[in-house]
Image (cartoon, rainbow, N blue to C red; front, side, top):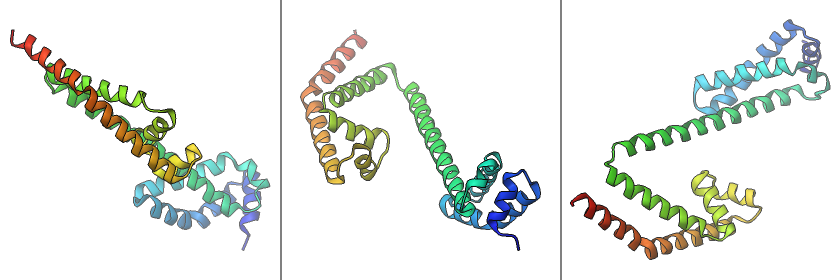
Length: 195
């Protein structure tokens, strides 16, 4: 039986039959791993197909690859991560659209009050010290775990927890101090509505 390395060399030279053999050899292993990652047969199949498409597109590089098996799984992992990132951004956009459409169902007064509250929260966040703000936004707006925030900011997980805890306290305090402006805004709004 021809080795994976020998098949890879043949594929790097454009041999389609060798490519088919490589595909057959790694179909089940790659599919199984991707199925474990995605928990979805269709997604696992998509990633498998993209993996071998990328392999064919980069076939000239195979001549220099010492462990083609590892390279195939690295490509599969990268395709999985790309699909995950894309899905995450699609989910984020979907949530944004839902928010926009739910805002449209609010009365103009409710919409103004909601926007006033949001502006107050944004001001509270803007008033945070830089490191607290960075940790808070990475965690709450970008959805990063404490571990990922720590890695991004090059600090410990405990430091991240402390930054976020202090940020939450500062935001709460800011909102409590400035809640009167929202109450005043609501009173003025209702005064003009009922005139």
